Image 1 (spheres, rainbow, N blue to C red):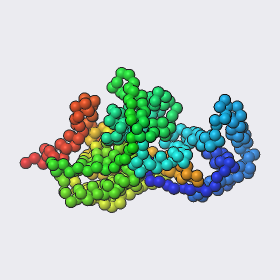
Image 2: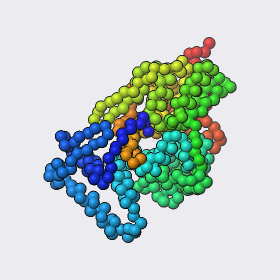
Image 3: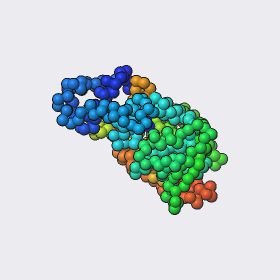
Image 4: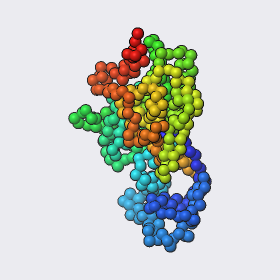
Length: 414
């Protein structure tokens, strides 16, 4: 998720559905409409009649309506079929044809649920999921939430939800099945790397209200800033943490981004700017090779403190932007494990009836030009967190971070 681009469309109806579908199919086929396309910031429109003769050999759009009519007349449970479900289902299929798990169409209900996610309030289990090697995977169970309490871990492969296989589901479809009213149960069947057989974990859903930033001034003089998401509340909470750091003058800072699934791009840029005074924080590369740099906001006030950033396999998206920027500018030492590698950029297009189209429009690079997508951020110092560590309530990654701040280096010894 990233900085939202709002594009509102004010025309609707079946005729415009036909136009919209035909345009997307044309794009996928690699057609060039040239002078027959008129594009503005609010809509893309063209005359299908004007192009009918030159495109008739490629496909006949009447086939769409033929399938529609056949389903309505021949489907065994046709009395249960709703036009709205067919309509929205066809739009979901269009988005799915991009073969990208993060490009999705959301109907008005789903769009509202997505907005709730960004506000940090929803009913569910409190875990972020994504796709790895075409398998739905737990990116990050949120701290203190039902999923974590039940034993769900980052990296778990989601095999089934309430006994129904996840094969063929995209991320948003899986989220919809996992979500539900608080107090109700959901059973996740998980495949874990160090387990011989799948695990069935029963989780009771709850109201998830998450403050995305927590701070702690330790008695040893180290300040810990834990960021769980880059949501609506993150920037204000982080700015408060910056003020605390400047007033307390700690021996060093630990920025804990472990199991942080990401969020808003502008928040990530602002956060990185607290260490990086000038220069690009992240670079977007678009399909045609065009790049756009996002520059520091010129703060850099935390750059005077020795900083350690903690990451793991659950650190994704915006958290990888921050870690990558601080690494490239040598403003922090990165400790932990390889991050998730979710470095693609999604923009949100608000549609006319409250629906939303989430589209992957670019990929992220660190300031030094390293792609984040599928690769992730490599730690400067690798420290693994084992099952034994977890069972014994040990955190060797945090301990290493504290050692780097509190223990003098050989060059500094007198």
